[in-house]
Image 1: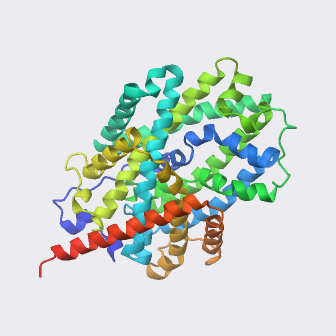
Image 2: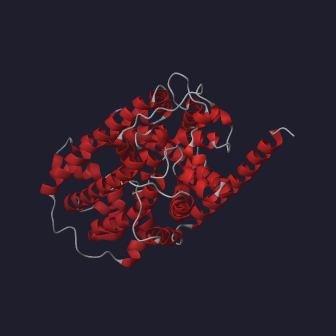
Image 3: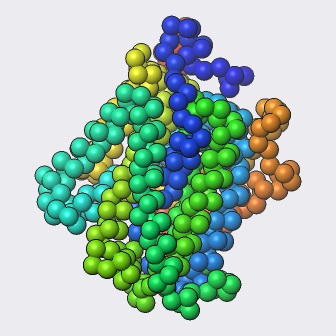
Length: 442
């Protein structure tokens, strides 16, 4: 099967190969960075406005629903040691068209997310030096960050992975301090740990809550550069969702217990930090936000180009995107292109529609991957020692049902954005297929 070889192997020994340099901790860091980003610094207020004192329980319900999808990614990912993640699973299970749509949506959302996070990064920098938040200073900050991260990832997967590891630890330290100190300062009557949230509020908050846990799928993409990916990917995915759940719930508890006006606060973590960490609390949490956004961008810059690489290697985008640097052993053409497009979106783009698209795009990733699990079981019998879900198709079926439920609560603008993106993807697929057919010798 196509899954048994790599692009370098099919081309011969002279072709440069990707290097397996990312260990288990690095894979966990990529996944955690994908989930815990800039959103955590506003999320407590949003969820409190919808769920009130019962919001910690709402996080647990969302974590349970997300874990069902994570389990499907874990089984699907344990069957592959190649680059591509959800794009690769869709290609092997459902063919080139579905795979192209998945890859296309993944690329759009990763670029849009990176652009949005970068603009959040410059806004947080502006807290300390206002010129960096607008004008030429903003462009300079965006350029410096993207250039630095692109270079680190280009000169070797080890450097990109080390950067993600360091920034993951750096982003978690302020959040853990916020939690550890805040738990002692919190009014424990301000939240409820046993009360079920209101059903109407939970329905309104469901997309926000579920997508607060999104981004874990980043770890599934660079499997060709991961040590023992069939074993390490399931461990990394399940560890990251556990870590994220604990962090989210405890932050919500601290915010509810220390900030009476949480639901209407524009900067909830900074405001709560000011309450129990003193005058430097806001600045401290702003530093945390800068580190958090930097970590998220570093993960996107590592993962995003590898979808371009996988689509190029699969012949669904120009083959030049699958080129590997002979010295650095990285997909350098894809990295340069991804960085340039992301820079353009961050500096000039109006990416509001692309950000709105992330809702339906993640549902596409979830549904296709969950549906792929039983198909891949038939096509690719799992070797002993790899990850397999218990209960037959029960967990994939529940995960698909949750994803379809979430489709029922998306807004019309999100639905239209999704349909438009899928239509553009179908047009591009036909275009590349026609060019590929036309270029073949007769």
